[in-house]
View (cartoon, one colour):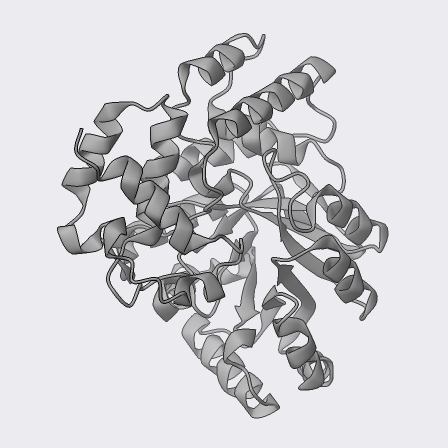
Length: 380
């Protein structure tokens, strides 16, 4: 495993972090984690050098932290540092902060959270959580030895990101960043700005929620095949992130053992300024070609779920992206229709807008569902 600086913190972090947002599930229900497999995957990663495991209060409808806690038994807790997040969208007082934090300690079965983040700060959430005195609360937890380092995760514009960074002496932050999102949200400007302040920078969605991992269309496959060094699409995405010196680590939300094995091996091959100018130019060409194909920018985070009317929002967008990435392959439409019950189709969206209020990508989900439904559900 390769290890990297984590801002000004005197500790080396593994290039790959285990993101516990997409653990393997049972019966298609995100709340029902396949515990034995998830534990096996997390422990494999740790056994191969991963020393940062990331979760959050709401992942897998509250069950992610429980399973991570189980995986960290039997001596594994001493091998890693744990990161999780305060659900700021549920917080209305410092008493709420205490309640959620104590619940998280109990779920993990730990006495300390090494890296604690304010989850998904945005223009709406930031002023409210700040006014509730979150910094006073966090400093108290630090002094009690219950929080090691304080950070935040972010889904909004760069100007707000800069404001938040400048408001407090943060230890680290977590931003969405990949070769398709170089100038989206905090983007490369945010990455460099946070690093210049001595903050560790954790990258989420380095493979764009899996969009950059699916079998690419012929035009993009031809570009990848022109490279001197052959890599699978997800490794190209990860290596692009790791190539940048400001990046502390890349989180990957892995849902099967093959993902873990491949990503660990990829991390072992990573390095700063490791890619050639020719390879960076190739990735830029791939990015442009993907933009021409017009995929929806859904990362599959599932914050929009459950839909009040039962629509399978992230799965629909996944099929829609795959359909265009595979040059409008009709077999994708056929698989789409076999994968869902009729009540889960996009056409059942009642346009209540609740999903859009929760989407960290600020997608116009109602309009996109209409487009996806017209494309994938129409009879031809």
